[in-house]
Amino acid sequence: MGHVMNLFMQDKVELLPYDFGAVLHSDVWRNDECRTITSRLTHELDWAQVFVEVFNRRVAQPRLTCWYGDPGKNYSYSGTRLNPLDWTSLLSEIKQKTEVVSNVTFNSVLGNLYRTGSDGVSWHSDNEPELGLNPTIASVTFGATRRFDMRHRETKEIIHIDLTPGSILVMSGESQSKWQHQIAKTKKEVAPRVNLTFRTIHV
Image 1 (cartoon, rainbow, N blue to C red):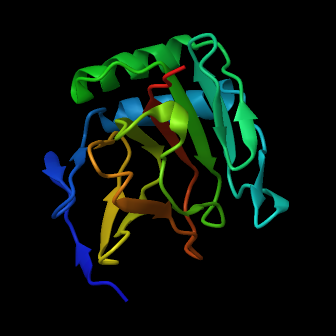
Image 2: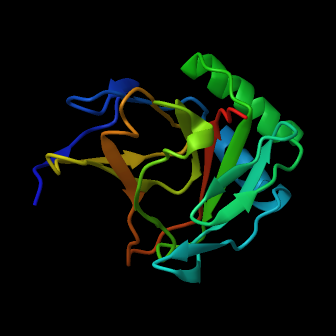
Image 3: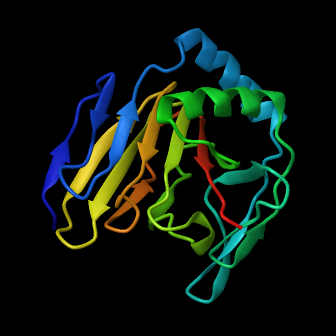
């Protein structure tokens, strides 16, 4: 069992003690902006139930997803291939602000809608070939606060952080090759969370 470290929110903080990096930017959007954006994203995006391959079985992901991006920026993971929908005006606005904060240009985004505490994502790394070596991924949160965990592959040290609405977590460097991350399910009653993970597809 790895050592567990609890971190408190700050305006900008590096979460990882080594094998960087994962920088959290909090309060990028105001509370009133977050409420409006959450409602629009929930109703305007083309959410779908995706089935993935787990231990040679096709199972439904415990969340809804959508994939938007530039033409031809396809994405494959767990036996599923996603073809991009055209950017909406709202997604484009969020992307531009995220690019300013992260100082990275993105060409695609994977949306995740966690409807209740029963929705989550298990331990994984975003290390698919089309993302390239040591990719930079910006994870934007709207809606409910959910706990985000990062676990080092070798030491098993675990970092816990609450991702609050209006925050951007920028994962880069060795954060995908040396660490895994998850959104654990919870029995607590939580409101829906919309997560946008901006990426750069190299194809």
